[in-house]
Image 1: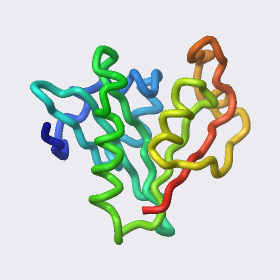
Image 2: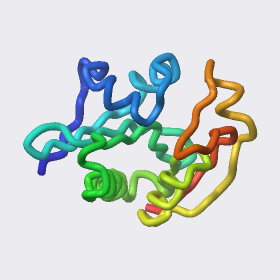
Image 3: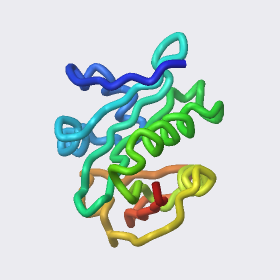
Length: 147
C-alpha cells in the first residue's frame, strides 16, 4: 500500500471524486487549491483532497474509496496518513459532510467529534437534492479532531 501526492491532472480521478461530492462544479471550487493524495494498493483504491483553512485548520474537502473496497480500512488509512503528515503544522483536522448514517459514524470511528453545522448548505449550493441512505442531505455537519 502506497500513498502519493497528485500534483497534476487531478481531474483524472473525477469518477472517484464524484463519489464523495456529486457535483463537478463544487469539486472545481477546491481541487486546484487543495493537496490531493491517492492510496494505491494494486491500483488506486481511495483519494482525498485537503485544504488549508487558516488558523491552524486543515480540512478534508473530499475523501472517497472505490465502492468495492469500502469498509476495508483504506479511508481510515488515508485519514491517519494526513493526520500524521500534518501533525505539528496544523492543530485541527476537520471535515464537512451531510448528516448521513453512512458518513458520520465513519468519521466518529476515526476520532472526529461534531463541531458545528452550516444550515441548508446542500440545498443552497447544489442544483439537485442529494440523498444518502434514504436521507436528504440539507445541513453541512462539521467534525473535527486534534492533530
